[in-house]
Length: 235
Image (cartoon, rainbow, N blue to C red; front, top):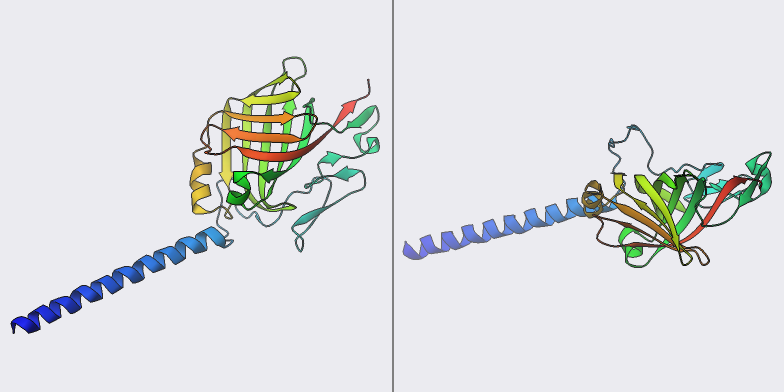
C-alpha cells in the first residue's frame, strides 16, 4: 500500500506539471497572436470602426496591395503630404523642400537604428506648425509598420513646442505628448505608448536629413532619415 500511495502521488505531480506546462504554452501562443495578428478592436480614438490597415494619403490614393500611397501630380512622400512643385501651393506661394520648420512643415521619414527592428523597420509622417513671431507651436506624428507606410502603428500629438536652431541643427522641444496605439501594436509597444505623456523632442540636421524623435517615457531614441517640404509665401 505504501508503494502504491507513493506511485499515485508521483503520477498526480506529473499530471499537474503537464497541465502547468500546457497552460504556459497556451499563454505564450495567445500573447504571440496578440503581438503578430491584426486584431481589430475599438480604439481609444474617435474612430471606433477605423481600418488600421489603411493610411491617409493626403494628396493621393491608397493602394492596399502595396501598403503605399499613389500621389497626385505635384505631390510626393510616403503619405503624399510633401509638395513637389510650386503649382500645388496656390497663387502667391512656392514649394520649399527643406527640413527647416516654417509656419507649417510636413516630414516623411524612414526609421533606422535600434527602433527600426523594434517596430518593424517602418516609416514616420509628421507635421509641425509654428507661429513665426513667437516660434511656439505644435506637432503630430504617425508611425507606420512598413517603409512605404501602412499598417498604422501609433500616433502622437505634441503641444507647447518651441523651435531653436544651433549649428545647423534644428530642434522642436515640446512639453506634452499624447499617444494612441492601433491594434497592430505588440503588447510591449502598447504598454510603452500608453505611458507617453511627457516632454518630446524632434531634432534634425538640416543639410543631411538625419533626424531623431525622443520622448521622456520612450526607452530609445527613434533615429530617422527625413525629407521635408512646405508651401510658403513668395518673398
